[in-house]
Amino acid sequence: MAKVYISDVIDAPIEKVWALARDYNGHGDWHPRIAESTIEDGLPPDQVGCVRNFTLTDGGHLRERLLSFSDLDHFFTYSIIVSPMPIENYVATFRCTSVTEREATFVEWWATFEVGADDEPEIRQAVGKETFAAGIRALAARLEKT
Image (cartoon, rainbow, N blue to C red; front, side):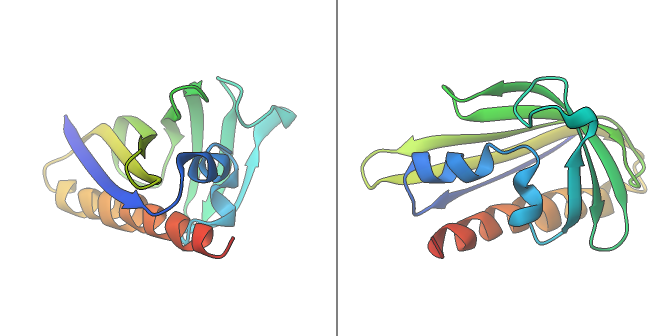
């Protein structure tokens, strides 16, 4: 089982970070890899069990199911149903924690998944650097504009 873990601090209060990040279908508004995204069957984007169906800027297509969601604890967990990557049993969590001393937010994004040894370095790069790290940086940049 492979694991990828990325974290960073965003210089904004948790209320602002979570208000933007909590929209499970809103990643298309701030993540540089997302071309378009919809929630299937018209369900709310914070309803456990909803499926987001999206296209990457490189044309890749994914479907992900929301497994758990908490406004109180500022996190959500999801699994990949369909992916162009050669992975299985992918489960990821996005979590925000308040850095109370300076009104900042500690953001963590991690995933576990099964991948063949030959594909693992490329998948770790795609998930860790190109998706999670790039997403956290883009989220911070978007918040700086507001």
